[in-house]
Amino acid sequence: MRGLLAAGAALVVALSSGVAAHAASAAVGASSGYAAAFPNFKAPKPFGTTLQSDPKHDFTKGIHSRHDGILRGRITLIRGDVAEYQPIKWKKGTETEGYFVGPPEGDVMAYASPVAKDVVYLSAFGCGESEGGMTINRDTGLGDKRCSRSVLMKREGKPALITVYKGKIVQVQEIWTP
Image (cartoon, rainbow, N blue to C red; front, side, top):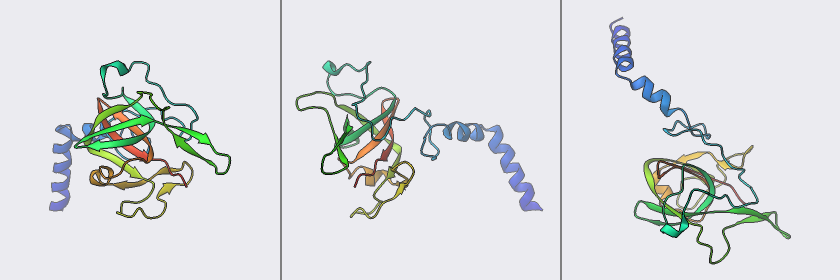
């Protein structure tokens, strides 16, 4: 009985301190089903055939963060806590199903954003050093194995849906390709 009363008192304290309100707002967002503290942006088609533009972005001001939203892209370089990334599109193949390509040679369409400390990283290849088997949602082809930030910081070049919010990368969800 004492344990039940103590749990009830703790719940009242948590509710009055706003913890429940914060948890509810943190649950908004991530289309992946993981709780996240960012809005639920509309995701592009994982295998879209056009490069996504960012009409508000001024590429003449050097490489900097993309505006809030989800980009079908690829992290090309990680330096410290900052990731450089670029948009990608699916190109149908003649001998294979296809592959992802970035902007044409010489195009300056690239971004750089800090990776959030609490980034949600959903891998399509597992969390191990040697990338294991598929860890995907078979309906979407998107990674569903949550891995640590340190694993993300060691991986470059994988196609992914990259979510940027308030100038930081808050979620990376890999797209599985054979």
